[in-house]
Length: 81
Image (cartoon, rainbow, N blue to C red; front, side, top):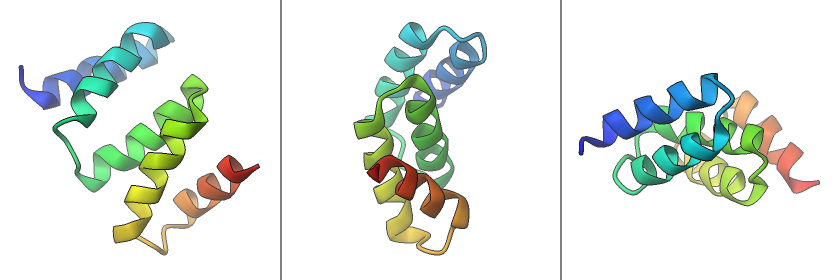
């Protein structure tokens, strides 16, 4: 299946607050997508879903390429505590 479809399904389920299904699709998408847009979206999604460890992983990966993104730097700080 197309990884973009996984990501779209994950976002759709997240918008419906169905985090169990959304997590499955974000996990599947993360195996094949590494764009900055996806990394940022995934970091925010996993934080909202309560998975701080995965959120931190995506934030850290994103910040390698975008070290001055203030929104993601704030999220990184939030996830440290």
